[in-house]
Image (cartoon, rainbow, N blue to C red; front, side):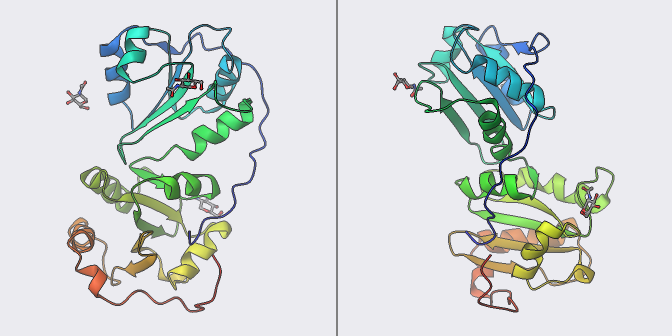
Length: 254
Ligand SMILES: *[C@@H]1O[C@H](CO)[C@@H](O)[C@H](O)[C@H]1NC(C)=O
Ligand SMILES: *[C@@H]1O[C@H](CO)[C@@H](O)[C@H](O)[C@H]1NC(C)=O
Ligand SMILES: *[C@@H]1O[C@H](CO)[C@@H](O)[C@H](O)[C@H]1NC(C)=O
């Protein structure tokens, strides 16, 4: 794993909030609609509120304000998703992945650990790169990352990011789209890995974890068409025939 940085423990203030406003999934259609409604859906399958991990889940879910969370105790829904005992499940669209945390098998269950679990697994159509998301990105079965190495972080109004976001769902299950805020000090190593300086940004790159190789799209205007052609040339195996992007210091451990 090239630029995977050890994930540091999030310091969180745990307050057991309540989930009164959280959606309770009553049947299979409701569960399907919930999962379909969002890029990353989290469902706490708990038989009762007294179940091991329930309070911790409530606490963690309250802290994860940007995630869509629901609860489900209906056995017919459990059967549909192959749930046999209390489990926290994450359903993702970007890599068509389901992650299940079986609570009866977990050695230790605390709210911090669950926040970490949810943060890591929050892989979206466009995931902003940081120490926590890197873990989830590298654990995905989708090993190819398309990176927008930008001179800023996530900004909904940024036309370039908008083009990037629009393209991402077309590559579901094939490539993960990653936004790197190149101004962030902690991302300096990613720029270095691609042999870029901050004045070179924005640029588009592809990193393939299976080959452990990287390519940069030639610098020019970043249009949807060019990015698409770049991605397609990777999927067609043509990019792999080209020379890898150069890293200035080959020996740099990332
Ligand atoms: C999922 O959502 C899309 C639109 O977002 C819709 O077209 C489709 O019918 C939905 N599928 C299900 C199973 O609800
Ligand atoms: C979770 O673990 C328990 C105990 O090992 C097991 O009985 C149950 O089938 C597991 N659930 C799933 C969904 O694997
Ligand atoms: C990008 O990183 C810089 C430097 O840390 C920071 O000031 C800026 O707020 C970040 N942008 C976003 C949108 O997060």
